[in-house]
Image 1 (tube, rainbow, N blue to C red):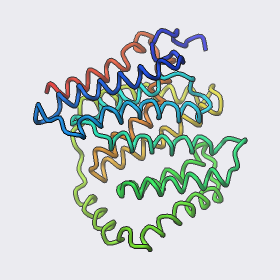
Image 2: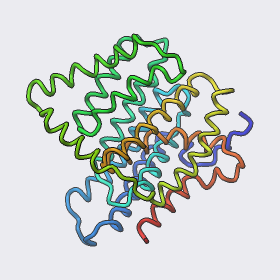
Image 3: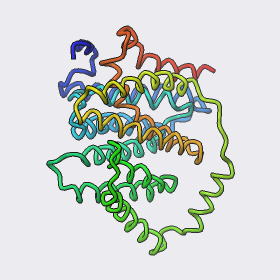
Image 4: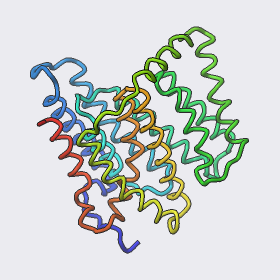
Length: 305
């Protein structure tokens, strides 16, 4: 622990007033970037005003949800700030309330996944909650019905394959999904046609500036994860591996289904814990001060070019 960065970042402070400052900064930052990114300079619609408010609240809510459930993230507001920096770096269009909603949903899913290994919780209940919530995300956004894949893989992140937890999660996911289609809230034909249309249009876009910056930091995060697997506590090891599971799923999703809102919303949540971890342990130490500024620079470059 001697390599931990001293507490000199404002969002490392756990004072409740910092939560208000976090909401204010992310809301104002979102409003400014949306103003610069919108096609019509003076388009101040209702959605223009609701987006900063929802993003600001989401930055606080995501921080609270994941810090409380992770059992290894420090009790401060750095995670919420990191999530916002990742989000703005990954987008080159105005951010909406939809990104906030999906990001909060992904954080709840990740928080439930953290609890899979909590001996204080009832295992069957936690696994059922994970399956149910994965189904809810799919109903909320039809592109995310595949969220069942990382859900059933989550209990095996320690490379111990157990069939019973996988079946419990899958059944818990299948029940609400079946009811969703049986009662005609949507049709299987619509779902299959959407999937086929997405698969027919598979292609690889050139990465944006923000994506390249995040890929650069992901290299450091990968080696830091290997280090953590050998020396860190179980809660941290499991948390980082669950984040990688989410990252892998999100990258595949971005290739198969061209829905930028889903992609950036999920990736910002799943890479957030790694960004916080790098702020403490990346070497050389000077790079720790470049993490979030580089993401903000990437967002500005997207606006300029």
